[in-house]
Length: 165
Image 1 (cartoon, rainbow, N blue to C red):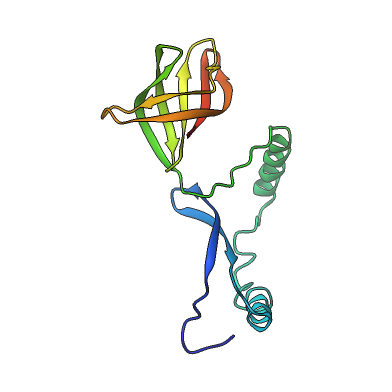
Image 2 (cartoon, rainbow, N blue to C red):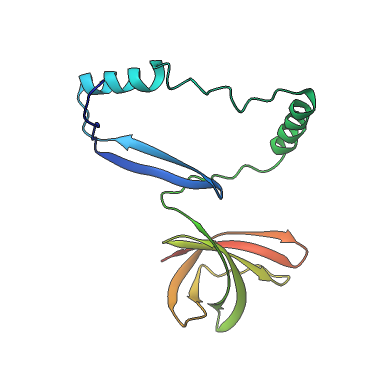
C-alpha cells in the first residue's frame, strides 16, 4: 500500500455530520475493491503506527475533568437516543418561514436544514398533525414537505422535522 503516488479509490458517502463549527465526521464505503487492495487498506488504517500516534492526546488527564465526563455520561444515558447519521450535510439556518397546513399558515423558525429537509421550531400548544404541507421561505420559494417527527422542547414551543416530498 505504500506508493509514491496518492491512492485513488471509488467511495460512496454513507453519512456526513457536523460535530462542532470546526469538526466534521463522515462515513465512507469503498466500492469495487479487490482482496489485495482491501487487505492493504485495512493494514494501513488499523496497523500503522502513524494512525495511532495521537490516539491519547485528547484523553482526560485530571480527576476533575474525568469526574465531569462521568456525570455527563450518566446524564446522557437517561436522555432519549437520537439517530444523527445523515447522508447529506446540514447547515444552521435561523430564518423565518411559513408552513401551510389545513388551509392555515403557521409561522416557523428554521433551526437547521439540508438539501432535502429542515428542522423547524414552532410556537403553540398543538403540534402539527398533518402528514404533509407546503413550506414557504421568506424569498417566496416554496416546496412540498411531509412531517418526520414532532416533539415539544418547552411549554408551548415545539420542534418538528420535515423532508421534501
